[in-house]
Amino acid sequence: MINKDIIQGKWTEIKGELRKTWGNITDDEFEKTKGDAQAIAGIVQQRYGIAKEDASKKVGDLFDRYGESAKDTLRDNRDEAARKSRH
Image 1 (cartoon, rainbow, N blue to C red):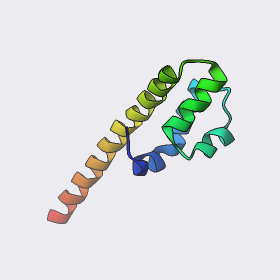
Image 2 (image 1 turned 90 degrees about the horizontal axis):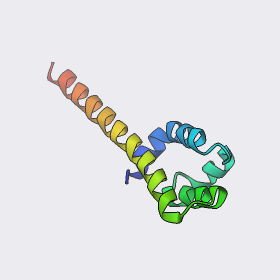
Image 3 (image 1 turned 120 degrees about the horizontal axis):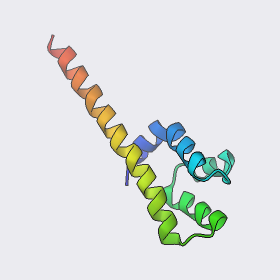
Image 4 (image 1 turned 45 degrees about the vertical axis):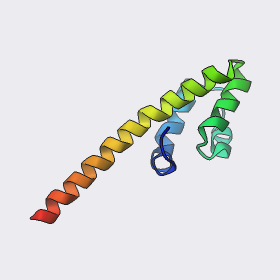
């Protein structure tokens, strides 16, 4: 699972994807979770009547996609900063 710094940095994008996937959940409900994947999975489970394990996996997979993207961006930014400091 991705760390809290990545979640905070990507929260707007993640929340948008969550809303596309589970449109019956409001922005307020997502905000109340503070980006906690388990809390989001609980809401998904309740609202859509799916198994807890399925909800957790789907939410976790979505978060992981953004985690990889954020890690790539952080690595690229760090590499660029290193190049600039050498010149």
